[in-house]
Length: 206
Image (tube, rainbow, N blue to C red):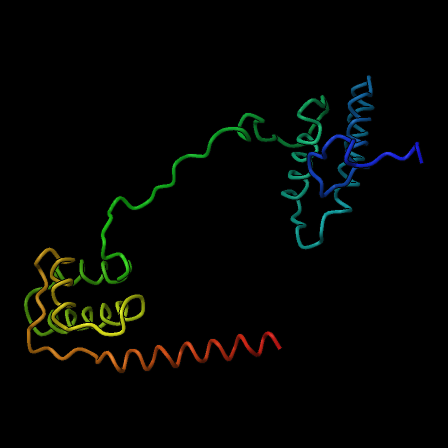
């Protein structure tokens, strides 16, 4: 029992998916003095690594390049061999990623979504007439549906008209006598969709 060695007292594996045996092979390759022999050993290790990679990750040249890159990672990039590919610079692994290009526009009315904003921008470019008025009503109905989906259970048409005016910077005005889709109809369809999703999830659980 005194000769047992537990993983808890061993060095951590750099890439655990390959197991300790392959990491030991990498350490052995690093100890080889002759460069040609060391290169042949590295090729053999890559071949073994390929045998333990799941089939769905196979990808020809890209797969082999990935294996060589992982071999170098396990060797802490301290393995001087002839690599058949140009591998990424080790410094790139520790470099901080660049900032994501998030939209700069912010609004407290974001729950209406990007589609509504796109429709508003398009409607603002229309000439006055029936086509523009029809699009304004369509946008208002879409806004009402989104509002009822994410907010309270009822909303006045005047409130939707005011927010449409705000989002369009006063360019789109909904006539006061416009009849939008009823809140009851929107909520009825919302409940039907929720019930259908619940039934579908229930079947999957069974």
